[in-house]
Amino acid sequence: MKDGNRFLHQVVCFCKRHDILVPGMNETYRYVIRTRRDKDNITAEHHYQVELFIAAIDSQLQDLNSRFNVSVTELLRLSVALDPKKSLNVEDICKLATTYYPLDFTEHEINLLKLELRHYEQDVHNHPQLKTSSIVSELCRGLHETGKSSTYPLIEKLIRIILTLPISTTTSERAFSAMKIVKTRLWNTMNDDFLKSCLLINIEREIVDTFSTDKIIDDFSSMK
Image (cartoon, rainbow, N blue to C red; front, top):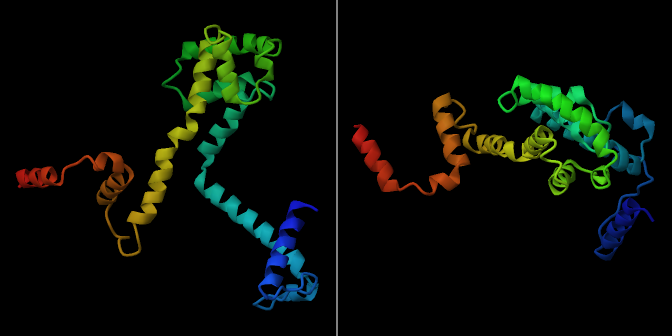
């Protein structure tokens, strides 16, 4: 029995034990608002297993599209170029370093990075440890353990930057969550400076907890 059918069987058994009415899954599903689709004789099983599933996936896609803009999507796509399971794309990797990390790599280092990548492409497929790496974090660890990090310092540097990407977006995620709390329907007319100050206090709670209330009062008093 598949996982979905097993779960459905458990739900049906639970309902029967507690005298809960179980709708017939093979019966025609009736929409609350009558539409032309009522004439299609859609079963309840089809509605719950197909239509609701598609609606949930569509909702998730819309949420992802609104959360990740074009720049972030491009950054994630280029980051895949460092996946050890995929063929190495030198141009995409150099574009990643040039476009999104210009302060970390000079023009001279970009040229050196291209040379490192060409040598690395031949080396990694023949190395007994590096060729078995399945994810970027294992590749970074393998470069360090095999001493190849000194041979390919710029590649290791870029990999380490990519690995910190989930951490670097944490503050942005916290900012979005805090905005829903701070800017409510009753406070939707606050100006940008006041909103920024409120968000900063809400996001950096660890720092704010170290502030003394008396010290804040004294500072305001001294400002007159």
